Length: 75
Image 1 (cartoon, rainbow, N blue to C red):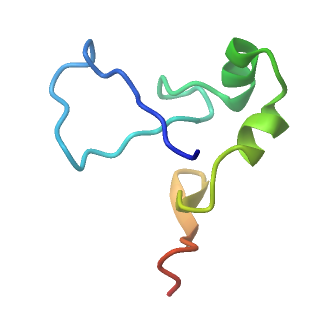
Image 2: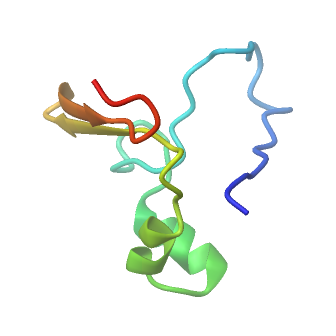
C-alpha cells in the first residue's frame, strides 16, 4: 500500500490542493528524514525507499526547483 493520512486538524486554514511537505531540511518546520525515521524506529534510507513511485519527486537546491520526476506523468 502506498497511501497515508496526515492529520492537519491543528494547522489552521488548510484547503484541498494545498502543498504538503512531509520531509524537509528542518528549517521551515517540516521534519527531516532522520526525525521521521526516529519516530518509526528505523533509518532514513528505509523511509525514503518506502515512498512509492506514484509520489512525484521535486528536487530543490537553495530553495530553487532543480527538477521534477513524476513517473506517472512523464514530460
